[in-house]
Image 1 (tube, rainbow, N blue to C red):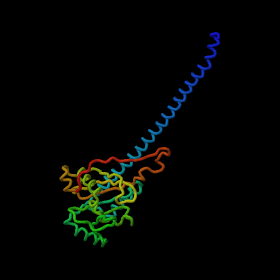
Image 2 (tube, rainbow, N blue to C red):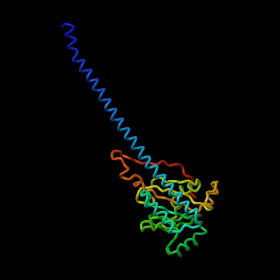
Image 3 (tube, rainbow, N blue to C red):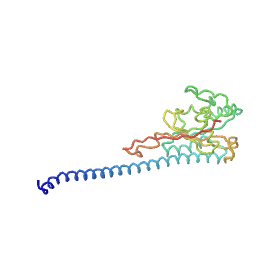
Image 4 (tube, rainbow, N blue to C red):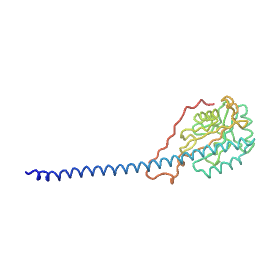
Length: 260
């Protein structure tokens, strides 16, 4: 076969190979562009969700600090004042399920404290603890942190009036850390008192309004706790969630000191 004929015979095969290589290259470039575009969209959505969550968790700290200021600005905060503060918070922030005030009571003051509350219109009041799902009179301890106010105060939560949070180990350890650090302390998601998944955030109150410096002085002057319950299912509302991203939230724990 003449050389020219052989070259012409080889040309179609070379063209096919070259065309295939070009097609593969174009497909790779197109796929890479699609992947990069999807990755950019994903990164934007993650950044947006992070911003939403950060803002809501900042709200939790601001609310707790605001309630703490009210207690420190007054010698006594009554139930009406606590109701007013809490209603504003609960109305504006759906992810906050309830707010609670716990008062620190020593064992020597327990009997007189219970009598005072009974005289205020709660004839069956006692400092209580949970035993197999039932509220029973709390066993003797050096100190107690019973529920004094909780909003909303509804039939579902009315039984918690007087519940000693120090009788619940998970809460007691975080309360201790809140007292020692004078910082907001948050549990891992749990369902100790609620049927819905959530986490509880504690902030300590001190006699003398300002937190003392050394840990021993903080423990000695602590006189109460304010807390917020956060409903995990309401942290991100439907209109805040991207339709095509499967989201799973997690929390990291850190070492907790021993309980009171």
